[in-house]
Image 1 (cartoon, rainbow, N blue to C red):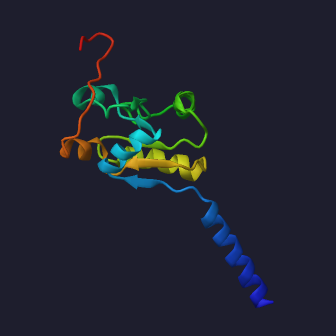
Image 2 (image 1 turned 135 degrees about the horizontal axis):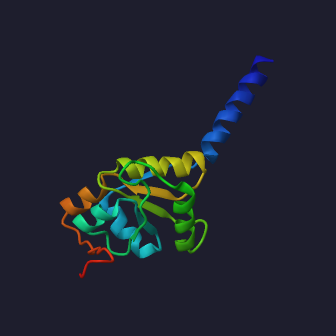
Image 3 (image 1 turned 90 degrees about the horizontal axis):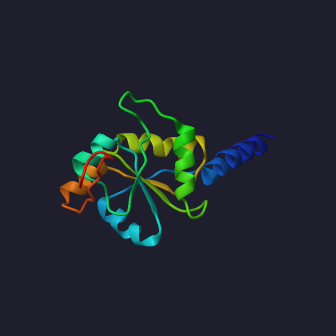
Amino acid sequence: MLIKYAFILFFLFTTKTLSAAELINLTANDINNKLNNNALVIDIRTPEEWQQTGVIPGSHPIMFFDKDGKSDTKQWLAAVKQLQTSPDQEIILVCRSGGRSGKVGHFLTDQLNMSHVSHLANGISSWLKEKRPTQKMCSPTQTC
């Protein structure tokens, strides 16, 4: 009887482990390689941050948290889904240092059980530190 319960517990825990989505940490080099493989790179920073540093070429700026730390998850997910070419397309999140993209990534994997979600572990800061190119982001009232 004890073996039966042990087997059931083992099955439950291993099944959950195998089916749970997991957030993957990427380096700047990893992202550079994945840009050519149809990955959807989303920069979740604020417009002011995009203007300061620019964005990774080929990425899509879609702010997740506003200046006050609030978010409209439903609206953000709708914007992402419009950009996705397929439901299993890899999504790579980028923020300044990896904190916000980690939180959003864990939300997508843990709460929504989305697979194929990664983030730039040390954010755009690591991209810039390696002197990788950025694309200028201008506000509607700016001329670039």
